Image (cartoon, rainbow, N blue to C red; front, side, top):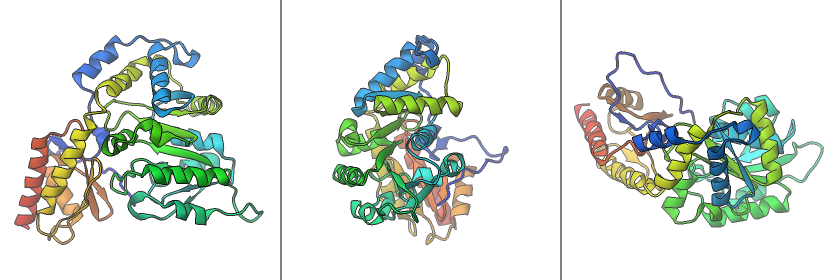
Length: 355
């Protein structure tokens, strides 16, 4: 389950349609204006008013006592597990979860933790699977400490965890003295797609974070929330990991702008993803998932064009997508228009027809 970006040939044409990831978004002109006007101070001594405002808003949004601004979502995950676990402890997660597949083995390298996979379809494990994986404490097994979910499930196809399942996972974890951690990188996509509020999704979870550099369109940053005591310890790890900043209000202003202007519009990305999936499904030999949010995975294996060639042909047309084993991932976001979706479909159709 590897999705590793490949450096482009310097001679490649300019990228016109970037579907590789929603991390490819560029700050809008209005967001840049908000960043320029931001009131700033020293974040490390609590003197940056814009960063403080952002953290207060996210804590309220997620129904938690406190929050802290982090450079990345990966650092949120790493800091959370470093707070909760000791060397030799076990984390429970889906096999495709970001903590297991996309963080460079940081949890083993920095904390000495093992991550045990819980299988399930579309990036989501069932509460019953968690219950079956619980091991009674004994001297032969690693102490189980944290259960984590990824909302939405990226490699699973941008699927949305049901609130009922999340609630049941919390109950199982509490009964077995496990901490719960939600990787909410695309939590706001789940909110818009399901109609369930961020606070309701987060209810009962010990720690939750949201990413601002994906569909929300900010250039950098994530905010993790939890109890005041937990956030104090996260701050310590933020300092240790080199994540503490100074005048971070410039970046926090972009995140505040995103909360005010870029959440409701996520539905446009979901609409474009469904349109892209419908168009690709009409091309002979292309197998496509039905997206719940903004991620479209498709397999060209039966089209006469293999994945590598199709990606290369699209790149030659200035269209960038991502690869995951034999599948291709196309991600819609605020820089992708309906016209771009139509052009992407037409390009794939032409490439397959020529083959």
